[in-house]
Structures are given as C-alpha cells and as structure tokens.
Image (cartoon, rainbow, N blue to C red; front, side):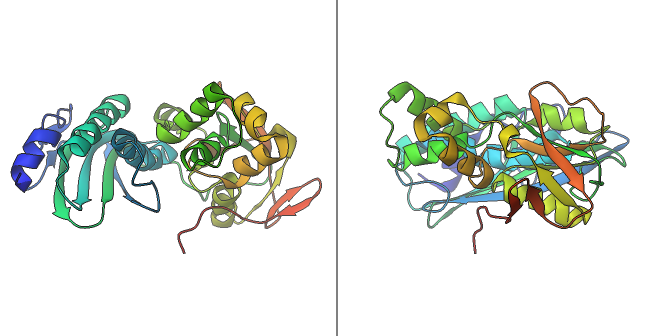
Length: 305
C-alpha cells in the first residue's frame, strides 16, 4: 500500500468542521479564523517505548496522543479548530492502522477537532499531533497571572492515570479486575477539560493542564508568576478506586507526581466560586516554593531529560 492510498483509506473523511475551507487531499489546509479571534497552536509527540508500549491498543495510542495535545488548548481556554497528524510507521500494518483510525475518529468527534492535514513516513513508531484552537482576541489563560491570596483549584481527581499506567505495565498488585479496569481506562482514554478551560477564561488568573504531575505543573505556575504556594494535602482529590487498589499514601504520591491526568490546575481570586467538580487545594503566597503544614515539597514529576 502506497502513502496516498494509506491516507485515503485510514484518515480521509475526518476533516469536516465549521472552520475548514480546505482539508485533507491538498498541499495544505485552509482554515477560516472568525473576526475578533486569535489562533492558538500547540504540538505534542508520542513515541513508542516512551509514551506507550508496543502492545498498547492502537485505538488508545491515537486517542491518548490527541487528548494530550488537546489538553494544551484546554489549559489556554481555547476552543478546538482542527489538528494535523504526522505519523511515522515502521511498516504498513493494516490491522493496526484500522484500529488506530478508530481511535482517531473517536477523538475527533469527542473533542470536536477535525483532522485537517498531516504527513506519513517510515521509521520508529511516532505520532505528532499539532492542534489549532481559537481564543477571543486579547484573551488567554496563562501561567503567569497568579497573585498572592488567590485560591488554587484542580478539576476532577488526580492520580488515576498513574495508577492506570501501573495496570498497563502489569505492576498492579490489586486483584479487583473492575477497579483495575477503571484505572486502566483513565490512562487509555483521558479527557482534556476543554469546556472547563473555556468556562474559566473570564475569571481565572492562571491555568495549566496536569500532564507531568501536580507538583511539577503547579511549579510552572508559581515560577512564571513569581509567587509561592501553600497546599493542604488532605484536600487533594483522590478517587476511591485509586485509594482502594494502592492505599492512601501511594495514591497521594501518584496524584502529586504521576501526571497524564490532563485535569486543570488553576487559580482564582479569593472568594470566587469555582465551577462544579473542582476542588480547592491551597492558596498562592508571596513565597517562592510549594509548602505544606509539614514542610516544603520539591517540583517532582515527569521529565524527558
């Protein structure tokens, strides 16, 4: 199967969107940017052996890759416009590609982010997703706006993806199949908080998605904002599944350092009501690091180098 037949068979038909003027099949995509809006662009790469295993379901490889990239749009408060896919394949495996395409189709629909272009080439399995989003002109959630006195919030529960990764790696000692599968699903099919990011756009002072772990990502906010943070560890939201399978202490460690939850960590002016499903976990201070009642914490989390 040649490159163009591969693209036609597995990736065509996913470019339909209200802002797509020219999508797949030409040299480049053409998008309509509405008046009084600006373009947001982010790229995310997933590599076999680093971000997923050779045995990971191809559908999950596609879905996770797109969710990771789309989460950056959520962190900025942007609405998805479209994405491009650059995929490097060691060989043409039609069964793998068909399953990958199913995950791609599901993500395009779930995130309302059409596939508008891309590239295919031969080499070690690598997926690069470039997402494009829209913001009202002059508006964006950033990392550098937190101020002393602001409240720190997170969405959802933290640590499930780290627990799910242990299931994927067969490192989970729990024998409750249903609980393990719930955690595994959190790793296989994360949900970027796109609607929440857009909701926060008018009043959040800073925001970031939790991709590398709460401590590492909150650390980016306080460094960019030149402030400190005081956390109440008892308020970190943990799921019942995670605590049951791994225990309280291990679950908290996963929530702080695990990453790939793609929840949002954000700050609000004191007294501002947070959207439903978000938990207050601390306050911004005029210090320089992350403190708890038991002492300081380091900015531990995932890093490539």
